[in-house]
Image (cartoon, rainbow, N blue to C red):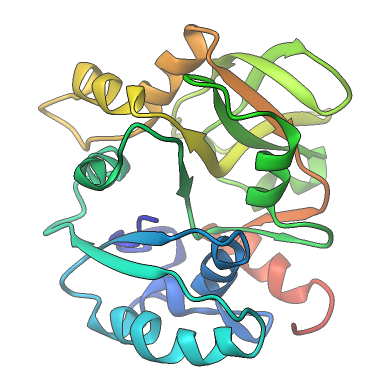
Length: 255
């Protein structure tokens, strides 16, 4: 779970408070992702964090366990890995490598939140058997009028395998312009089930001159035909995006 970024898309809200502690429907943003994975019964959560986010670290260590006791009897081990500077999501993911054995793991971006129904991670895991080398990603269908609520990366194309499964053949990279569409489209979101092959692809796709992004490595997995997209049920929001953050807070009632 990477939380070392500066939250520039939400500035000035993040001037004095880490993005992950901004309130979403009465809870800190990161509560939803932490609670989500705790519900799965995972043994360990690896949090890649900036040394400047002591306030966030204290929340995860001290406040979140108290909130968790009210809802889930099981509490996983939480390991903090320091990312000295915001070198990018690829760098953050690569720093988790020493903790990953030859088994699948969840790559969870806290700025995606899904309301209604089962959690995105649970929907992923139950939708497809975890075959060796086969990776999964959560997918949401977005209406044209909702496009402003999401970041401009992760649009997908692929082959339908059933009502809610897609063999992803193409994953779009980051672009400067916002998403604009006159019809519904599919977008991958920050919930992946990955195998250790991703670390080799991260090394192969690293650009020494720029931010180390995870998207090129994930695109390479898609090109190899090794990513199944699972269309999620529920109402999703990119709360790392200002419009998405505001829309999520206006949606429904506090948890």
